[in-house]
Amino acid sequence: DIVMTQSPSSLAVSAGETVTINCKSSQSLLSSGNQKNYLAWYQQKPGQSPKLLIYLASTRESGVPDRFIGSGSGTDFTLTISSVQAEDLADYYCQQHYSYPRTFGGGTKLELK
Amino acid sequence: EVKLLESGGGLVQPGGSLRLSCAASGFTFTDFYMSWIRQPPGKAPEWLGVIRNKANGYTTEYNPSVKGRFTISRDNTQNILYLQMNTLRAEDTAIYYCAELGFDYWGQGVMVTVSS
Image (cartoon, rainbow over the protein chains, first blue to last red):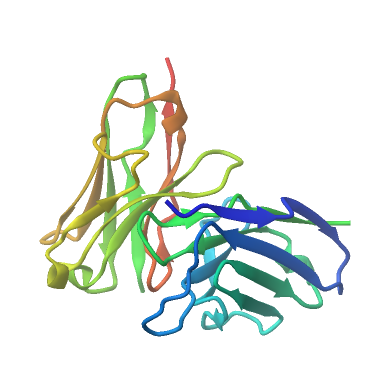
């Protein structure tokens, strides 16, 4: 199984700050066939199901604000949230969709400072 | 409008069995892969398995952590996804979601508690 390691586990921020969440996979998520990285980012607010923000490492899902930026390749990935808004306070998870079983990172809780 | 509605959760004793259902509507059910994901309270989601679409023969993949105890199936005439869970353990306590991950369709989740 591919192990996904996220850091930090929690992050205290003020509105307007830029934050970075890291995700490392135990093996490469880069497909040699199409040069795409099979890494997704989810946001989850209390009492809700996870919501897809980013797939293929850097493609924003329809309707996701452009302050959410995914980057990285191979085994190292980053989710950057620029100018954090109050509505962005949530848990964030990376997930690999390169192979089965799909695996999630341990999560990053974004809290208000 | 796409809807996924789970049911069948509740309290079950260790060693017991439970079958969850997920009623799907608003999309052509047979065209899509359907997954089950669970999330223990306060922890990260865990992907349990997937059942492929008609074009791919409705074959299944499972997380090794539940393979042999959990079975995913689907009733394509009634648009219902199932998760049969056997030999349940305390660590199976979680919210269980059905989902179509490609288009990010998720149900609201159903709670399963395994406790004596």
